[in-house]
Length: 266
Image (cartoon, rainbow, N blue to C red):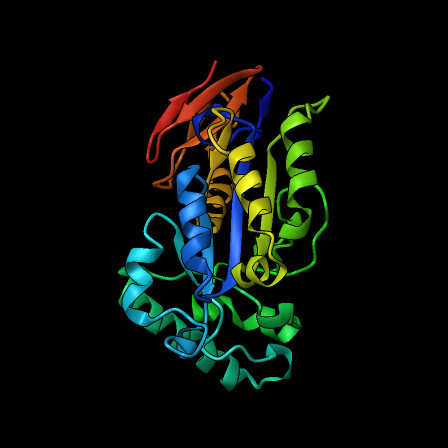
């Protein structure tokens, strides 16, 4: 029996996720644009800067990012590779505790301040409750992450229009899951005076039935659920031990596997 892990929720093969750092006041305009087109993003926040000049306030965080993901970016944005283990733990756990008190759910993801990390940083993240962390090393394609703790995005938002068009047009010879992952900072649109590019991108990318719009943690949870599927020796049954609904293809046909369910294939 030919079984492939090639589908996102709803049986679609494409997904879009967005990632924004720092929690600057320009997130207000950015979120409004995303919401207007049904796009979802993850916002990696430095909780130690709330209320500082140019940064959002603590009181507005929950309402502003409703429907998106509130994620960690450390409390005060240090170079983590230059920080002792104890300092890494303090920066991340302090940020998590602060953000979780506001968000009302466990904060399980982050992005690296300055894109800076090391093997030591990677080694301590699981013990600090971090399940994914985004880098700034764009690869320019639509591949899935090899390592969620060093998650390389498709592109910075300065390249999003060209790659967004390619993403919509591309029809792979061999169907597989494709992910467009765009990252950036809202203040850059303000500094560069090019908010119209975000408007154009959001209008172009929104409203496609064949695209799953997801936050970073939703992507991470889905990929983990796919890898957690348990098949019978004959591959004619599959058990999904997670709470996340998973889709796979069986002999070229989409197959839905509800969370906690055992499904007979074929």
